[in-house]
Image (tube, rainbow, N blue to C red; front, side, top):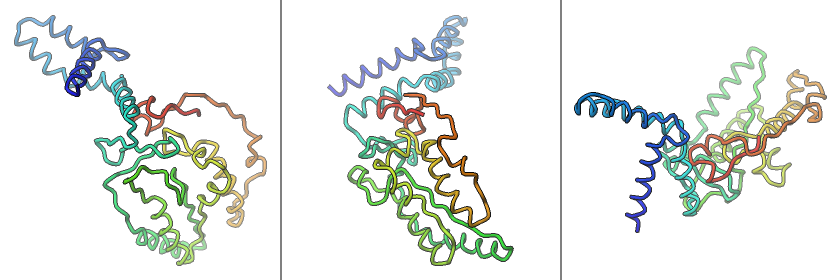
Length: 258
């Protein structure tokens, strides 16, 4: 059964390329050029010379294979979709949102990075320049159990270690994770489902959180610019497929509003 399904999918892929479905039809045009060439050897050379480029261009323009692949992963219930690039392996969290996890990654002690940053802060201080380190939240909140069994991700751990050393060295820090985790009932709402970035509303909330802190550094923000009602907000529904969604297609986790 597996062999039959594989052959059917392979045949479907060939038909897809030959018909140029939703693509530039480069493979189809290449076949026409080859057939129009004089002599069998010229026909073969034309096909060989142009095959890779034509296929790559069609696949680049047409994401039908990616969509089909993602749909199959969804149907199989798979929450880990490995990528040729290990850092682009897509993992579906318990919330249904996607995130990148390098399955081969190991915990890295960020103390040396923190020490280097603290040394930089000391040097700035000799010139009367203050330094504030702002720690950005990531898609996975602290103390959560959103990853599939057997998958480990160290973003929060390395962030904690960095802050620990900075604070021990007397560097001023602001951990935005405290603000992000303390406001919304659903932490996942701060982030796009199919992308690693914050939503614009989350970026604005970070701005609102940071602005009062910057007052101590002589950076003043007018109150009106911190008021959400000062802005016109337009929402495009089912419009945005993020970097993680593009690796697995829109069927796998849907499409975001933006």
